Amino acid sequence: MESDRGIDQRRPHPTRNGSGHRSRNGHSHLPAFAALDLGTNNCRLLVARPSGSGFTVIDSFSRIIRLGEGINETGRLSQPAIERAINALRVCVSKLRRWRVRYGRYVATEACRKASNCGEFLDRAAYEADVRLEIIDAGEEAALAARGCGPLLTAKRENAVVFDIGGGSTEVIWLATPPGGPITFLDSISIPMGVVTMADRLRGQEITPDLYNSLKHDARMPLGAFDTKHGISQRIRAGRVQMLGASGTVTTVAGIHKRLPRYRRDAVDGTLMDFKEIDAVTEHLFAIGADGRRANPCVGPERADLVLPGCAILDAIRDEWPVGSLRVADRGVREGILLSLMQDGYRG
Image (cartoon, rainbow, N blue to C red):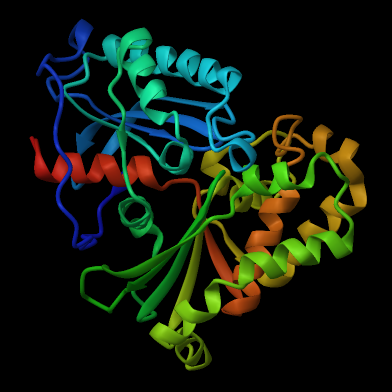
């Protein structure tokens, strides 16, 4: 069960959609809620029902679609990428109908924000998949991700750096986490670098240590001004800051660290990793080469070219803010949407 620690996003509340039907087969009198996050790399759906102060997931879906593949070169969503996304959205809609979802919010992020032909894609999604997508800006994406991760943050430190390494961008969020008080969204920055855009930049090259360091340098460059603005480094030196990472990169790193025979969310979500343990995983990923990464059960062929670019971004964040450890979250925007919908809608 997920719970809401009461994060104040300081953003407008999301709208509610749906017909108000109850679930079939008498499973529950509680309505079903849904959150769909269409990102640059993945299409993800959660369907859940209220439970206490949080929710219980009753169905989910995740598929790698690489919607933003090649977008940095063309500025457009490619037709193959659109087809992959439409097919994934059809699966999502079938689940929405199966559970007779009462409230839902279905958002698209960086790839759709960038694409000049996004309007065409949204029209096709509405006509061919029967789903109306809402494009959210980077600030709202960050706030939703922070809200979704809130239950994993401790009240023992006064602030938190939360980051989400996506396919097309990386959101870095600065939160207040005062003991006994609500988590408060203070600020965020969106770095226009993600695992798909960095992998596209490599054009299939094997990543050498020099190339890796170049990627890391580029990812770190925008962080300095954000650090100065909020005095994050000073607070880290005073022991007041915790770090949490929410992304396919950090969850993959945690799965490899735990030597899982297959990826399992329940074994990864909430894991606390020392920076030295993260370094060891990165060294291992280099050592096993491209074939080894494809064969690793927590990476696989679909993510093999993405994991080291993601690690470069992760290293850039860790180098800028040497907190020493981070909490791993297999949750984010979808969970934030669900908590928002349930708080603002039905709390039976």
